[in-house]
Image (cartoon, rainbow, N blue to C red; front, side):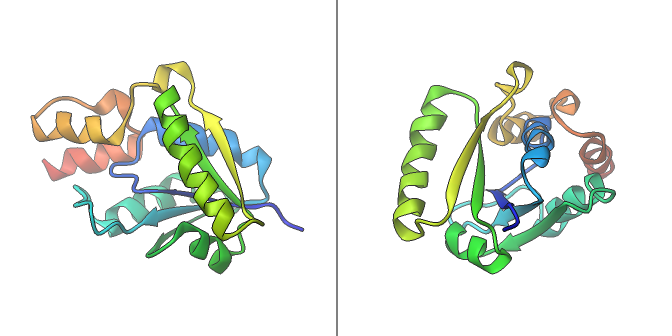
Length: 158
């Protein structure tokens, strides 16, 4: 059986914290699907098309990586893409508590899908998309938190 993993998130914007988790997860799986979840409660700063473009550009030379957008339950997306693992990044203890509750719910719905937690490297602990968006909205420099592709793209938008 192939080890297929879904890494769900909003990736708004895609940060070095995200790419750190993705890059370190790649050796663990045969395929990694990065899923941009559509959340009606969130109003993204960047379009879904833009976020998919960033992911596809960064991982264009890696056949193990795919990027999609999805609606609904993450476990339903897992079923659609054949994923038997969900990947989640953890920065702080409170992230773990929140993510464990979601993992428990997903396991209740679909016992065959296992959630894997990776802790981020220390230099990415404070890198959160929410904080990056706040700095961007206020005209600050976020370049140290973003992959080059994202930096160049945001620079063109200004």
